[in-house]
Image (cartoon, rainbow, N blue to C red; front, top):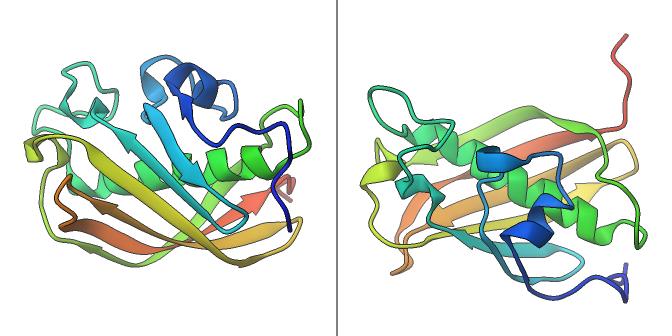
Length: 154
């Protein structure tokens, strides 16, 4: 599968928000660093923002790393879609083998590195593996996720 010609290799938060079904502060990714037909790499510092919509009184807990990864997966799907196509509806069906090396994301200094790799899939569902690392490459969270696409609920 080749990447659509019209899709840029890098983009800012505004470009990301135009390609995923998240807007405002809920668009957690700030920059697309690179992507190809199988992988995507994004970065962000939104985990440090006091108005992060996932933050609770206890802070930004590590399981929210799954949402960061899910947004990277959604962006990847948007980049693979036909040029000009609206963001595709989908939902995170499962997250498996998820491991956290930290308890809170908001205690991680610097930029989060968010990566996902498409392992398999079709027009109805896609299996990704994902990992979040700090700016030095230390793993913060990793796992696998299944995204179900455009499938009406029974």
